[in-house]
Length: 195
Ligand SMILES: [Fe+2]
Image (cartoon, rainbow, N blue to C red; front, side, top):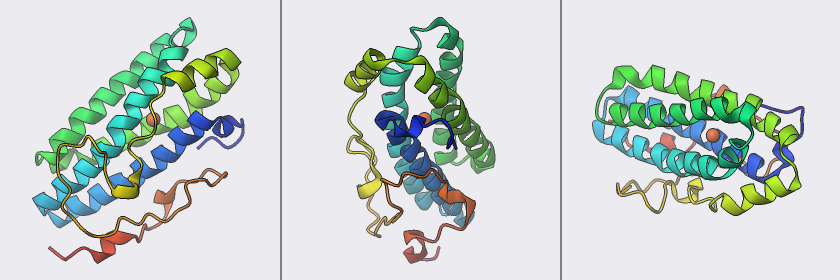
């Protein structure tokens, strides 16, 4: 993750990078659910992940991406990132529907995609955009609606009837970038009933 150019100190970029960490952590929950072969658990984990992923990618596309697309040198790159958003949505839906063999590819595409943003587009944005550009980004970017405090997105049509606490207890305002998936992530899933 980018730790050298200062782009994370730009508030909207810092938010997107923190959301990436939540998304990666949620993909780990999905992997653990798939490992149980409990289809209901997989559906729930996929819904939580979609509830984080969809508002995040939408916020990127209507805010930062829309403004950067105005600079010709970024147009093609942003189009490819948007295409990857669509691929991720499609693959996640297929995993949720039972194509568990697709999980590894989905997570690989997700990680590569996030790396392209964290270490490619976001640092580039810090150089390419000026003050008025960032004001437009802020104006066009929806409020964060997919914060994981309640484990899902308010618009998520799929009910999450799990009642275990979703206590990813990492601080959301930490200044140093780090990914939580590099080590075993022993959070609330430990309290889930065995399948
Ligand atoms: Fe992203």
